Length: 251
Length: 247
Image (tube, rainbow over all chains, first blue to last red; front, side):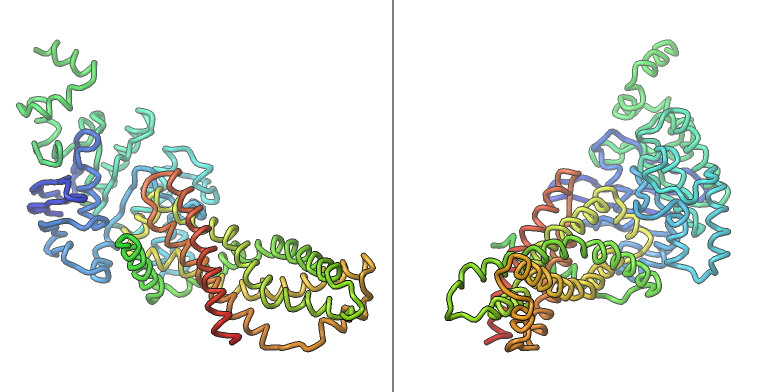
């Protein structure tokens, strides 16, 4: 479980996040949604410690994460897996070496054990016979899946995904969503996904927070989102033509 | 001025991170070996070609500008040897490497920054600065002196060939010249300069790449800045080191 209390973040005096308080539950897919530029990525990066916050508290279980120094954060970070928007695979390493990297850095396993774990993770995300390919040789969907394999290689307790569906076709996006949800349940991880894709919201949104202009405007789940009376949320949810049409038909 | 001091502070903070204790020395060793090939071995060709022709040109220019019975012919060899050792193989070769290796380092690290690969390392709890930059630093500090020695040898060979093939002097004169009044300390001086220049090229270029903000345009700019700043610092430290080591 991750708890954020009264988080504030600004850049050069311009406030980006204001008084964000939320609890992300373990074993659930927690979604942060909002328009582009609303502060979703800043919130995600603040939680994982890539950005220093101005004030507030970030708790990983009972550890106050944002007050730890770099070395103390390492223990928590070894329990974090992160899927970046552009996958962030290491260009100079093959698929196998990418997934193996965290094992090389943080475990004392033998080569055989590492290889077994790498192959298990790659099979889990349906990447087969691609161990020796480089990231440049992979499609967008494959890159995301390899990045997920790398993220879960150390059996993380926390999984962070920044726009996992960006740049993917709808079918591949659904596959990635389903994969993240399955892994979250399988390993009872605390998963936080940053997205503005309404398909993802309706597919896997067990807990959703909506951010608008750096402020948390709404909190709920996928069943509650369509009946919300939050105006800014409705503008976001029913932004596309199909959703508008469905809503008018429903009325 | 404030911006300059801010950048200077950031540079030294980065160096502190780079020089902190490696998490897994074995992995750093492998990375260093990779960088030795990538930054060192692949530079031999350009350094050898440029040194060969520079040695040849120095010999021919010295010969054509000292066509006088007062000057013994073997001084052409001496001129070629000292020019290569004292200035070309350390300073000019470093400027060439600032262009080749420096831009390479800045663009590689800058691309890692804008594609969030550095963030990925940080999330895992890896000291990204040390993991990425330290192997490059060690590789260039080890290999650049070797490049300097190669440059000296190839340059003198180039000078000897140009001198004898063009008929401006005999092989015996050239060989006598390159042995005449040889000061072994000049080699030490040249290698000390090379090590300092290697540190400048790698650290400055890494700094420019590591703090890139933006996209491919900014990576290109960082690469250009890396070459310009490294070159200026090399020229500045060339003067300082010459005064310190030869005075």
